Amino acid sequence: MCGIVGYVGRSEAAPILLDGLRRLEYRGYDSAGVAIVNGTCIETRKCAGRIADLARLMTRHPPVGHYGISHTRWATHGKVTDENAHPHFDASGRIALVHNGVIENYSALREQLEREGGHTFNSDTDTEVLAHLIGSIYQQLNGADSKARLVNATRAALKQVIGTYGIALVHSEIKDFIVGARRGSPLVLGVGRDENFLASDVSAIVAHTRDAVYLNDFDIVAVSRDSFDISSLAGEAGNYQISKVEFGAEDVSKGDFPHYMLKEIFEQPNSVRDAMRGRLDYDECTAKLGGLNMAPADLRDVNRIILTGCGTALHAALVGEYLIEQLANVPVEVEYASEFRHRNTPMSGDTLVFAISQSGETADTLGALRESRRKGFRTLGICNNVASTIARESDGGVYMHAGPEIGVAATKSFTSQVTILALIGLLLGRIRHLSTSQGSRVIEALEALPEQIEQVLKLSDHVRAIAKKYASADGMLFFGRQFNFPVALEGALKLKEITYLFAEGHPSAELKHGIIALVRPDLPSVFIAPDDAVFSKNLNNIEQVKARKGPIIALTSGNGSAHLKNIASDVIEIPCVSDVVAPVLTAIPLQLLAYHLAVELGRDVDKPRNLAKSVTVE
Ligand code: AGP
Image (cartoon, rainbow, N blue to C red; front, top):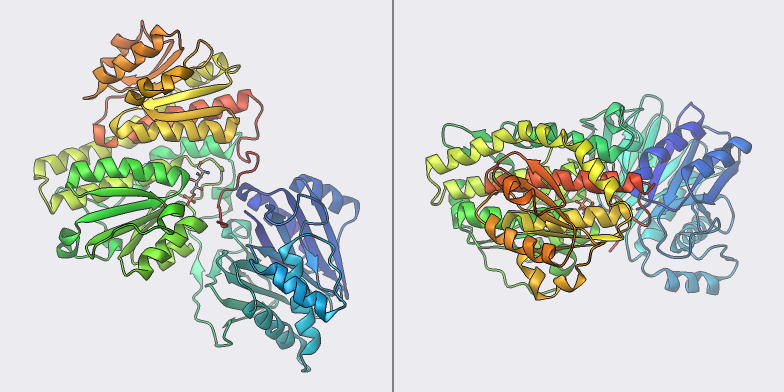
């Protein structure tokens, strides 16, 4: 979604803003722009297209100045055009504003301004309406202190806004000063020495400072070179703390990898290890998850669990359903976050809800979390982004500690989420019926994972060869059973996202209930069929595809290879692993398959079309 970077300090703002925007590229965008204050004039450069296009524009006509704001736009209101790119100006042309979010009542506000007169709009955006509203109120306010006037005008305008926003604005006649505010869209203040920053994501500013204030909803921040002041929309002094960002600029670079996605796939031995670090209790054969903020007696009282999330997080939740039900015998339901928040899911007092989100900012998941808490249910988060809104608004939770995930296609976050759900299953199981020896077997299976992932990653070249072989296919089908059915969904999502090919994931047995009509000699079927309790059932389904001349890519383990080598067109052999943690291993070859196929097809792997990393609109 949209990204914001603001800078006020002694350095030239242009390179800092441009570098920040490049670091936000992964969020997904279709146009970009900057506004830098030079004396009493605001220099704006903006265009539809890539940051590289903006950079070319800025090289031809370099904007000069020591403070400014910048933006990557992901279109919601108005087409992808130069005019609709941010920043937008008020009627006086002295206030420039960038915005992330949606002003739901922008039409009413626009009509109100048009009635007032003197407002001509140059774009179709909701953002321009907000810029005009702030400008209009600024004109009407009195007071010699122009900084306070701008903050008060912003506050008064935002009180009229229905919707979500993260904003940053400058006034051409207010030197070294930026105003920021948030509601529903993230905004972080970077605190530097003689310079300060605003950004929708710390990765944009972590090269300059690791001291950050994560603003809360309804915060307004007035940022100068050497100070900042945070107040609420109601005008009260804001509560804040300066946190140390856990990662540095090197962690948000590609290193020696051609793409973030590949780097993140190869980080999985470590990210899975980090998801378990300090959480395995060898003496009691259970998991230690203090962040849940729940005593064993509270956990024993839980009689139903709802797991909610979107996209890949939802697929991890589906694995979690199998895991928790198998290990703890507690009924689990998985809900699309976007549906859950709007429907009357029957829930009793002992229902525990988990909102799963890598970014911790997904609007639909945040909405589900808020709805669940509003109804009085204990709602926990499983997030990667430590200071995210979901992490902060939950009653407790488990951090993934996977490090920044920049590639739009989620990879390491999936395997970390599944690992954490296994820990939750183990913990709940051990305070119920799971014996010490069963608990200890789960711990052994978890501990073996990083080493086994290393082995799976060695298959990358083999998977690349398979990807090349099927590069002319116009789609793929994915099938799996039990724990690996959600992996089939995830494999299909990965393929769709970054190759733009048609893909569907199904439980293997569903094949004969309709999907088999799609089978044809040029449409490969990927079967996730490890050597487990349902292998022979999977084999039947594989034979059904084979009988109809459908090419088969089989992902298997152990004795499965011997059965499949004469049936499948291609076999990918992974180490033998316990059923409960199998998805951590089986997902990885499918990530690699999507990746190599996307590269083969010349796709923009890390920034696939139309997609955003963190979906902060509904
Ligand atoms: C996965 O590859 C996608 N990019 C997307 O489905 C993602 O998982 C979803 O938007 C949820 O994101 P979150 O984990 O940050 O909430």
